Image 1 (cartoon, rainbow, N blue to C red):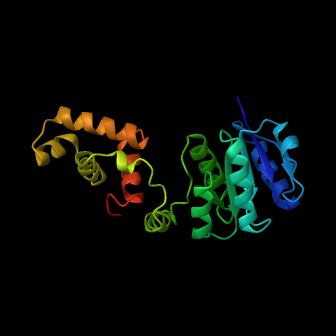
Image 2: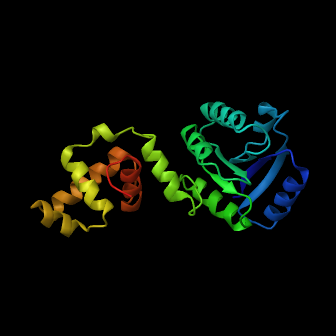
Image 3: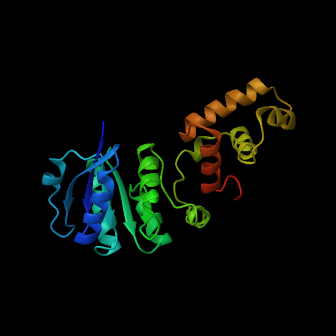
Length: 214
């Protein structure tokens, strides 16, 4: 079943171009376009979108962030990606902290749109790989997303640090003098507490929260 996308922009050329490109993609369909200035939320929701794609250059980025924060408070299940010509780390941090699902550099290829949309629908935040290290560093520096850290025990934090280094359960067990089964149980509990599903996500979480070094 096609995912329904609504474009929000003020540039008719960009919207027309994106609609044409999406026309050839079976997975997604642009069901409507809106001008950000006079957007009607009720009319927008009549199209039951799965995602909003918003040009963050159409107004002040603060207004875009405010719209996203307000919209997500009512429709958290709808994914929101923004796109722009210029990468702004401060904006990206505010975007993610206010419920946005990522930002796309429109100077890149249309493939980036596809990558970002796929990541968002997989419940991941999309940040272009070129700026991901800088983004992660700022996230740690600004102490964003600290929830659940206090729930981890000292042992769990220690094991999470080892996981972030790429160590296997057998290696962690040897380093701590415990059984592999115990390590496995600890990792399972860690995943539940920090709400991740694999070791890579756990490592990213640890870096963002200052538990492990970049």
